[in-house]
Amino acid sequence: MASNLSKDKQFLKKEILRKKSFLSVGLDSDIAKIPSFIREEKQNPISYFNKCIIEATEDLCISYKINIAFYESLGIMGWQALEETLKYIPEEQFIIADAKRGDIGNTSTQYAKCFFETYNFDAITLAPYMGADSIKPFLSFENKWSILLALTSNQGAFDFQFIKNEAGVELYKEVLKTSSNWGSDENMMYVVGATKPEHIGQIRKIIPNHFLLVPGVGKQGGSLSKVCEHGLNDDVGLIVNSSRSIIFASQGSDFASAARIKAQELQVEMSDIISKSGKYNS
Amino acid sequence: MASNLSKDKQFLKKEILRKKSFLSVGLDSDIAKIPSFIREEKQNPISYFNKCIIEATEDLCISYKINIAFYESLGIMGWQALEETLKYIPEEQFIIADAKRGDIGNTSTQYAKCFFETYNFDAITLAPYMGADSIKPFLSFENKWSILLALTSNQGAFDFQFIKNEAGVELYKEVLKTSSNWGSDENMMYVVGATKPEHIGQIRKIIPNHFLLVPGVGKQGGSLSKVCEHGLNDDVGLIVNSSRSIIFASQGSDFASAARIKAQELQVEMSDIISKSGKYNS
Image (cartoon, rainbow over all chains, first blue to last red; front, side):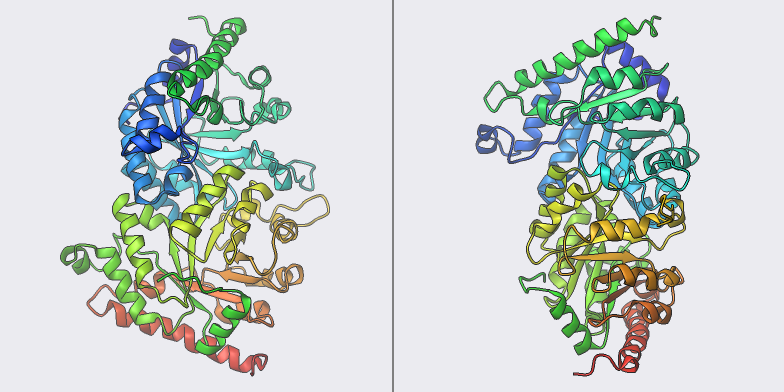
């Protein structure tokens, strides 16, 4: 269940080192992709599926990322599944609404109320195109995080995010520079795709102390070790998300244990990276 | 009610000339701002409020724009109000989900299903930052429109949208140029804020034939006549939205007739502009 714990940077670092994991499990629980026997047998297939996935993975991850599209697309039934899912997530988990919202100020305030108050998420992903006044309403909520898109994991990232300005600086870097003044590294994070690890070093020069939410490991092909090589900072500073390759690891009755195996592969790799870095010995 | 009419450009033009209006009424029906007596007396205050506003304005406008944030923020109750509201809207109206969504391909497909299938909206607003593959899933739905943010009405538009590339071209123009190849003027429109009319002439040079959705007249201070001076094309080509200054014109029991008066002021101005242009005589 969502909680009123203050999930600041120190809390996140402590959880990461305690669990030797900076894994986020993405609950992209597409009704068409969950095992068919669950769709046939269960009254609330998505919340049942999520409950099983959460129970099988919660000791291996420090975060669950809920991709709102997969719930919203089902109408009211989807929002009910979302509400039930939130009850199953242990309170120390960092719960992210992957919603990519952003609008003029009075509208952004409504979205912030939705995800931070009505549903008590710890964080929400946001699109930067509309600028400061579309993001600041989210930043005014205490103990909540805004996670801004910077460099996304998809092919379309190349359409606009790499456009260079007159000084030769790419748009995604301008987004980082400008927006990092809107809040602080205690209420903002950035989305940086695992599929573009060669840019993470440059990103760390602009925002050395912010946490990065890194999607794209697994199904999208990103490499965990390359991400960490450039992305780790003194607080670890990374939340690496994997969705489909964990939650849809099997279509059989072993779907939960298969998900656990995939999550554990990543957790073991993360544990090894944390140990070998030698930076986080307490 | 939403319908299966094919609402193509010719349909829109015909409706505009029939009603002598290119007005969209924005149902930004904030529960905290609707008249207090409705909140106290009615079981479903938002859908009751919307029903009254729609009945009072439907002959004066060709479109209703529903700002999803104001419904989503209420949880399941809000989505119920949205479903009821859609039933009250006459089928010839162009119904826009103002949602500003956009995500990687498989996620955008879910959002498209949500708004185009589950709720049968005619159009949805989208954020361009993630590029082609975040928008194309929406364009694959027949008889549906994607309305991409280009130049927004808010102050934050100046943060990134005016960044010039190495050739001196602003980002919002790059968005127009690049994205206009993803679809056509029969399935794409653009959001261009009424608060920046001086740029609409340049926008028309890049996309002469696309419809523009123009927010920001009214509460945000944009001028209708200036927008039309630069924005009208052979199909009229403009849908001008006003939300708060219409729907919250009065807090009394006359809220619906007060909304009608405000909508009519704009419709009369639009009728006059259409006549004076001399372009649309049949």
